[in-house]
Length: 100
Image (cartoon, rainbow, N blue to C red; front, side, top):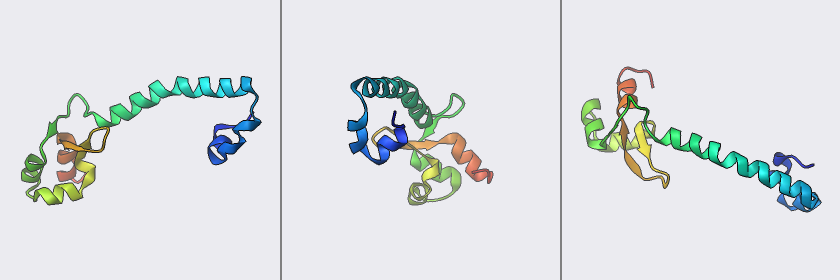
């Protein structure tokens, strides 16, 4: 059976799979969607000890401008569509302490 890497590199090779093997690959991929999605969402949401603060608040804490905060994307929290929701308070504190 083709590996996922082989299928990704050359999708045209899917035709080489038997219908049974294609069904097995599809079932295995489908089973991975929920845990992969959970991992993505976990990376977007702040941890329980963290909270989202506004870009303006983050700028004041860092004694910088809002533009400066936007340039330091590691401080930003974005939604699934890539829109900025604000900043991670914990990441701002880590940045100030030189740990980010």
